[in-house]
Length: 261
View 1: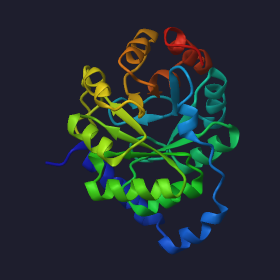
View 2: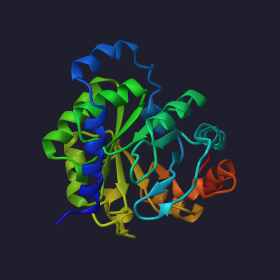
View 3: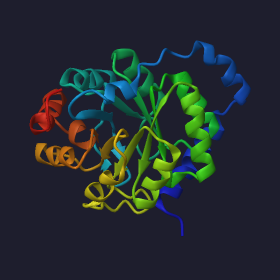
């Protein structure tokens, strides 16, 4: 039976095929790629770190925000103390675009995460040319060999990688990979169900020295404080921030009980 994730990936592959060019052509352009900003270093700083997301829509919640000025929103995130800005580039379900990514990266000095469903070598190289400082690889959406190949390629190109997991098996795979940044998403992308206990089960499994990022459903300072207590180094937040009237203050509010920015 096809899952939500399968459906998303099918659409991503169609979109990739529509814009795909030979890998050799992308490789030739790498010398012109933007200088990278060091996402790992930014997320490694003292205190709870925030990856703040430019996110218009999602399969689980529908439309979240129109976001007519993604660059302006990213600047507010930077002002509020975010360590990384995440930009959705998947078009069909999340209403993102590579144009959003470009204008955001030009408007801020923070590292930027390309948030998409990376399922081809082409997208990895494309991400480096866009200037992605941090790349998302979702364990549930890739074969073991794809995950290894794309991770190694991204690292060879200088990008940091956020390896996203949803259950114990996926955490073990991410650890075996040697990932330096592992995300735990409490939302299962195959069913869109939320596992309220995912963070407390999975974050402690991740070894000391690996950055641990909690993803999905984080909306209060109390939740952030609890995540810090179980070992999380950072949070990825989208819905709560794009719906906030003042995103700058929303970030500061979330961090209120979890350390300074």
